[in-house]
Structures are given as C-alpha cells and as structure tokens.
Amino acid sequence: MASAISCRDLTKRYGDVLALDHLTLDVPSGSIFGFLGPNGAGKTTALRLFTGLAFPDGGSATVAGIDVAADDVTLRRRYSFLDQSPQYYGWMRGQELLQFVGELFGLRGATLRGRVDEVLALTGLTEGAKRRIGGYSGGMRQRLGLAQALINQPEVLFLDEPVSALDPEGRHDILDVIAGLRGTATVFMSSHVLADIERVCDAVAIIDRGRLIVASTVAELQDRYAQPIFTFEPEPDQEAQVGQLITALREASWAGEVVHEHGIVRVLARDTAQASGEILGMLAAHHVAVQRFERGRPSLEDIFLRLVGSGHAESTQVD
Image 1 (spheres, helix red, strand yellow):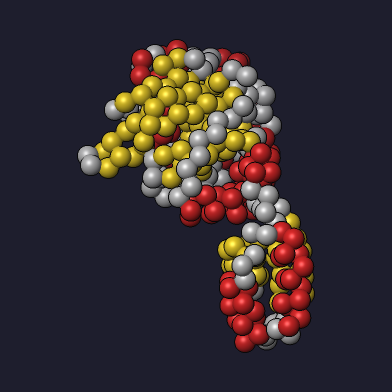
Image 2: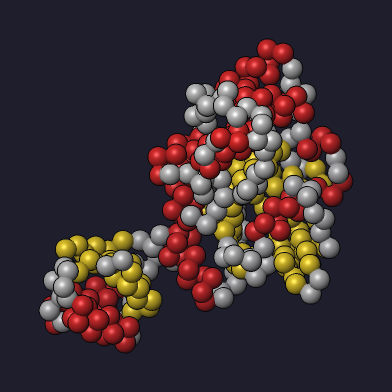
C-alpha cells in the first residue's frame, strides 16, 4: 500500500534538546493513524515538521509524495492541519471563517457555499454558523477547527488532540466524522485519549523521548502483547482485606503490573495458566467479596503504559 506520509531518519534539535531522534515511519494512504506518546515525546515536533511549520536538522519527509522541505504550494493545498489550540478572529462568525478559509484554497461561488454548508452539517455547527466565534464554547471552537480543516477536502489531515475540549456526546460525534474519512483521506491523529485512538484508528505509532518505540496495527499490537488483564471490583468497606490482597498479588511470580484505581483492581498476568489457577483462590483466601470479575485482552492504554514505562524499543513498521 502506498504511503501518504513517509519519513526517514527525521531529526530535530532545539538547542541541546533532541526533540526527534531519527524517526522513520510510513503511514498508509487512506488509513486513520494514531500518533501516541507521553508529554515531551516529540509528537508536536513531528507534526510541525510534516506540515512545514518547522524544518528538520536531518533526515527527510514526504506528504502526499511531496518533500515537505520543498515549500511547495501544491502540497499546502493537499493537506490540512488542526492545531491543539487554534486561534480565531473572535469578531468573525463561524460561517464567515469557513468562507474565508475556503477562498484561501481557491473555492468560489456556489462551490464554496455548498462546501461551507456541508462541513457545518458534518461537524454539527449549522445552528451556530451565524454566531460570532468569540461567543463559542470550547467544544464549538474545536468543531469549527475540524470544519475549517475539512473545507478543502484534504488528501491528508493532521489532527492534534482533535476532541480534547468536547463532552462525551460531542467526542462521539466528531470521532464518527473522523472514522467516516477512512478510505477518502489519510488522517494522522495525535491524542492522549487512548480509548479514542483505539476506537477509530487502523494503526498507531508510539514514540518516547523522540524515538519510535513501535508502529503497528492496533490488532497486531493486541496480539503481540496478549497477556490477559484480570479486572475485579471489590465490594465497599473492605479496605484492609483489599490492601493485603494487592500486596500479595504484587508479590506473586505470575503477576506483572497491579493497579488499584477508583475502586477497580487490574492485574496484568505474566503467566496466563498460573494466574487463571490462582487469582480466584487468592480472592477467597483474603476474604475479598467482589461486585465484578472479568478477564480481558489488554487495551491500547495497557500496551502504551507497558511500552513507555519499560523503555522498550521496537521499530516494527506498519505493513
């Protein structure tokens, strides 16, 4: 499959800080691709390099087959970028902003009006189209950002935290819009909400300290790190018993990470057979009554925490 975004040994320094360290990556055309990493990992730096807002100190990158360092106007008409915190003219109305952006891309007349109406409807902003942007909520501003990024029907769409300001319903709606672009555009999406990435993305890359940790399809990652996660929710008022159980679990040879958050205990098993045979017995031995107990596959968040936390360094590319 052809690559919509490709880079080789892409490197960027800011003074003594190596922000991006010889990144090599290929993003298949028509895919929705998640770009993940902890704060300071180099995600925003990579986005700035791909979109021509910064220039590399080494290596190369292409978007839609065009060298991003060439400063080619043709390329800028073929992609769009939604920044994490886009800035607008507050006195403009939403519809006016979209008309303005459309004109920058050469749209005129009925074609422009039709496209503005289309992206307003797509992002749920039709009713707010004639309101001034200065009075928009954070969620409306984020919807507007996506609308203006879609106005030129880009081949490649770069999104930096596209749903961070939205409520659950709004996030669901916008993720549906993004998912609907599959096959018609390539979406390169940076987000810290891993459940959102897992829901809509075909493949992901994880970077840490500027270096690629892994790049693969979500399904392949889950298969590769298929150790089960045991999750249980203790009944209330058992703090002492639960505390003793967690200590015992962390000492068990078959248990990996044990996390106790918000009343839920999650146990990553190193040895599946031994874990399956012992964990229920440990619950009974410590007299812990549970409301819920289940065994499941690791989520993308589980895999992310394991890879970033371990400093593991793989570089398997997307097929």
